[in-house]
Length: 430
Image 1 (cartoon, one colour):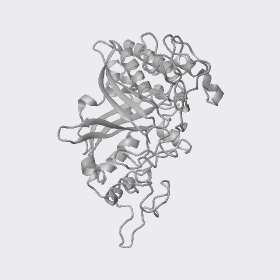
Image 2: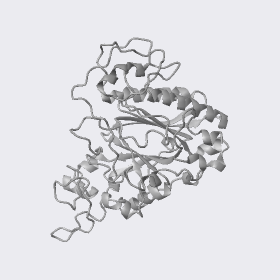
Image 3: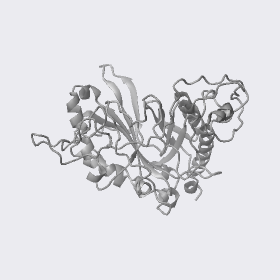
Image 4: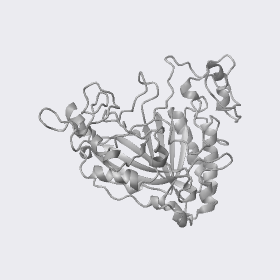
């Protein structure tokens, strides 16, 4: 839960969005968007797919929320640089007994084609469930990665990156091995819950006999347009969470987040490493604190995210003064405040791009809520990124008594697939 923010790229939602067009069989979800061009929405060419709906010529077009589309092909995989999405699913697979490199290549080829189709607003292919037939792409992204164990299962140990070495143990870890790691990892995000579920179901069905689900988790964020203006997200503790995320405009952004084109191993060019942690928030304990005590734990004001060293009402982005003291000589930002400890300049410049989801998995029989953060961070080198910061937090972060890390994974996420290629092709066919 480092003090870093997410790039805000969410499209605004109309104040009075019109209903989607009435469905009739025979055309693709992309064709359903055909009338949207008159409203100024930027869409690609339509594609055909059996079983989806066409919009009558007089129908009101979809809102910008439904029409928002991310590209599957590109330098980097989707789901890294996009803004926060309202709904997310994370899942890991293990290859089936007897499945190896050949089966993995065929699976990644199927998954990539399904992701490309769904992200373009088309049906998944034969056997599509029709769950999302009324919706546009809704900013759907599907991202694929490889876990440490994948390389032994496929005979590719020599291609396994050193950066995939297992993460060290931390004092707040209470890790469930059954919900950690895995040969293959998939991240799904969208602005619509049905679109996200549709992708989840399609990916699961595509796995067939080649792989089985090891674990799966569901997450959410605030919906686009829910606030009067774009702003950094809040977590389930009510805190503005992620103010100091690295920004793509920064000169060293690519170096921090992505493996260089000439990096090692070659198949990871333009890729990144994802650390995934299921972090349970001990909300009953947290909510017993006063508002000021909560602010001291974080080092920022709960109302607007401004640093405690700045005057009330300051902007969230106001630079934090780590040396400022109050009238009694106490540091304005406590020495163990989360925002102080997690700052890149307090960790040798270590930085990671955070793109989390909140989660809520029900209430235990004793009334304890099972909720928290599906923490996902991206970096060119997890040892210099996540591990460096987490080691510092592990030594005295004021937030640590109120959270518990319950699952963990580290995945090598290769660069984006070019037209006509599938994700991981350079590894599996190189």
